[in-house]
Image 1 (cartoon, rainbow, N blue to C red):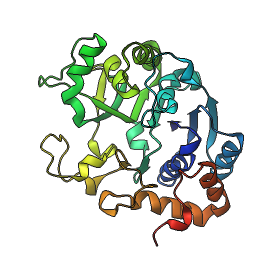
Image 2: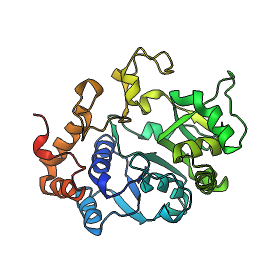
Image 3: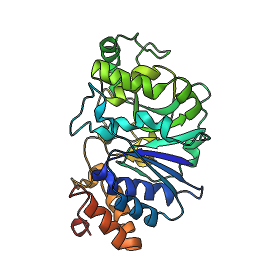
Image 4: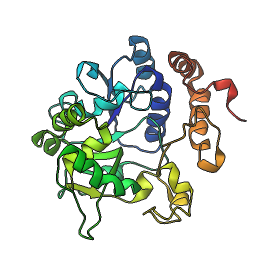
Length: 287
């Protein structure tokens, strides 16, 4: 199983927690590619020691030189690095799973990895943001994309299964980056604009976003019983290292960090220090 993350130094601990949750739930060998603008050599070494069974490759890139990128605290430079994954992955890599660092897995990802994506470039979970897909295509000068039902489809890019050969052949990353520069779209919108309808929808349990914890949102598309069946929790909108919200599943993250601390305390402490305060304060973890 080949995993890809795109993070900066501030997300080292959340990424490690995400990776820990994946590794503990699978018996498959895991290869890891980390795209980063600034991950330190020290943090890289800590990751290698924390995950001795994982093959770790750290690829450093700086997208800031690209003109027109929409950069902010919400959309940092690291977010755009996943658009460069084709050049970072090994030439013989045929399939990869991309995960945002703010995800926690509670199931074996090998089933997700085996998703049939013969009819698409990627597999992902539909996002309830689809109503704005028409406007982003108009802004980008691209035709609207509609599902067979006639409604636009928009995927969340926080969890993706990628056919790497198709991604490279279609120049998805390069075209999306060019679109970000030209139109000011952020990375997820650009990916939707470039991939269009050429993606396969997977069950929403593989990317349970925060809004799915609110059962009465009239615009949501996922079933209302999705939370008890979640396989990946994606902490959109809230970050569990900043807010303790058991009603929104933040314990899934803190439980993993606690387990990491019990197994390899000094290494986890080192990662927490490397985040410059963004990592969850270990002493502040609820009992």
